[in-house]
Image (cartoon, rainbow, N blue to C red):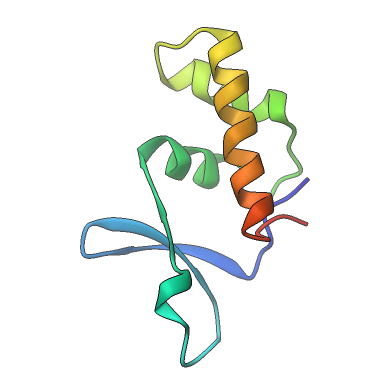
Length: 88
């Protein structure tokens, strides 16, 4: 899987949010806010094909977290991206 390239993260008023490039009159109720770990995953994996295991490895390398917990959290992150139609 891969994050769709037309989506970019921007820092607005201290929050990392996902926006679609090149669209005017955006529906602001559809902006997605990323917490620190979600932002790390986005920045690390954006532009690459990745798996749940790849995302979990990023979490293990950057946080004091067990591999099983990281895998569950990575799957939740991926599920949310899929729900928001941000994945190819």
